[in-house]
Image 1 (cartoon, rainbow, N blue to C red):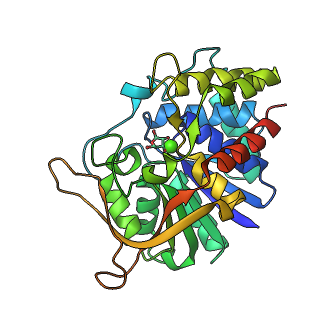
Image 2: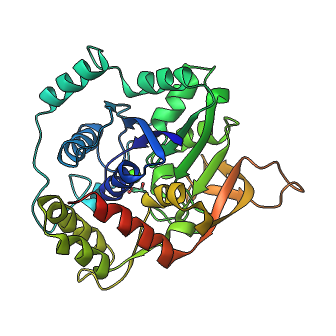
Length: 322
Ligand code: BDR
Ligand code: CA
């Protein structure tokens, strides 16, 4: 059984990863910390609560950091729209945030709700050596937790993160978005000495979404499937206006690994985060010559059986939409 704490910035692909976690019977899902990333915090938190409510996710959701440790705020709204996730169909209905927070407060007997960073620190201390941090967003919440509570790094079992790349970037030529949005935070996390698996763009580009997956969701015909299909369709159209060019799948890669680890291969590497470069800030510089040139601080996901992994993702998702 994996004890998972999810750190996220929904985001459509974050949404898929959340549904996959909720479907995985080998996962005990302790909490969700939300951070600014794809959009400002108010928007990513609102998205997270709408997903929780309409898809019946039985997990506490906490609002976290609203600005990066260093550098200016960077979102993906230029690509994903103001809401951080666009739809070609019906918008996921609004929720009453105050009412949801009151419900959650009563459930965990805490009023007011703690900040996500404090909730995360408490969860790690209460489950020493047991929690896997699944990070699919800029790493601000995690870095702040590690800086605020110096005792917790050795208590974290493992970090599994979507971010970085062993080759090209996406937000810039060199950098992947989650790392680019807060390189100083990523630097803290990669240096923390916690076992870490990195699922970067080099891996995620082996997972390709096409119109077939969107159709499978739409064909279910339920309200939940209809909402998701509209966002799925808009996601596919990021690459090409008519959706004809396959689109890589990012955050669910980590959730697929939790379900089907045998589909993946890894290589140890030492990863440094570029904090300075004029063209390369946020780049994950991967030294694979281990131990000749460096000590490994990460296992980098290198290959995945793409078709089987996508099949796994769809099977898990479809089960949550009835
Ligand atoms: C990552 O950036 C975000 O836009 C996605 O949600 C994913 O976490 C991909 O680079
Ligand atoms: Ca994300």
